[in-house]
Length: 557
Image (cartoon, rainbow, N blue to C red; front, side, top):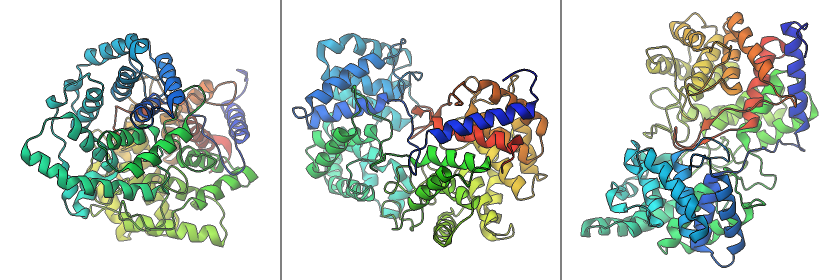
């Protein structure tokens, strides 16, 4: 691009380049995610295969060890994904795996990993009890930590009535069960604790079997080699549920990548497409006026067909939701609203109308008693599950778009909850992202679409977005430079509420940050445990950037 082009011309050129790049990456009906290999996935898989399938998987284990050594960062730690900044979970997992499996060949990498952990205050320096238990127990398996120094995992929670237990553990049930089985092997217990663990053991296996069936008996948990490896390791060491161990080993062997790596998320569908990034990308292209492109329509239809047609036992929710791993997996409100807004914004036939109706019915059924939406379990008591302002704002916008009045109790209650949950500075905090931009922008966008941009909640949120814009025109997650993810969220919201000058500065940053291939370098999001397990998704960044450019001046929605 040349300096003589106007802002609108540059936006149109950037949008054209980005759209072409995204469409070129499409495969029949889908967008495979070009995600980088995951340290946590490789470490979890290596640990599990070493414990549960050492002879048959010897080659995979050796390749995994070599890859982990190569993936170590210069500071001695590991990031969740290769080349990301080091974090505690990935470093503890990789250090334990290498110590247990690699022997002398991994001694230097283990020493550097332990040095990184010590400089961060060790396991005792973690303020999240589950994080401390997770990393401490994994390190204890490799003889690198005394598990008796950890708080006891309260396995008696598994014995509570299903409704309460579900609210207390939610999507953390599989890792919680894994920790319970690890604790039984790694930690000293009194007579009463041993009795409780004996009572809880069959319940724990039954719960894992429910998750096993939820994912089509693929052997994975959450479509994640890391979590699957954690569960497989725990069960194998405890001599429990050999049928689940065998299935998980099969999943880990099938998802191993050339060169010793595993991905962070690897669904069981043959095309191995993830719903999340694809949904962001398809929505961005729809907003850019490309809804009639055959590739976009095929992607929309693939996403629509991923709707779950059966109720979920693990979350006690009705049919009609979506999950991040395709047609099977953990139904949740985040992926559900991401797909529903695509259906809302595109022309539909009878079948897609039925899919939309089922999804909207699921949304209405899953609203919390407090008026919000949680990610997995209705009325969840798990902070990382919900309630979530981002999901709540998008849900409100979807419901209004399909004809639900702002006077309807479902929207009234959601708006009251948003007003109560707004921070004093005007921001909102999403559950599965870092920083305040995604949720705050979603609230501004939703209230603007509802004709409520002058509402005090919308004004305070808008002002926070304006104040948090960086000098270069971008927005960040609050911990570093600007990202296309946060900047895309903010631009779309500010355009919707009429703040065009701030949006223009953000757009100029986006245009300048675009690579010559039409793509943007994605920022980091959170997964599972906030601020401890991070990933980046090119399809999310691309979809958000394309949608923002379209909203500003590209001629789309």
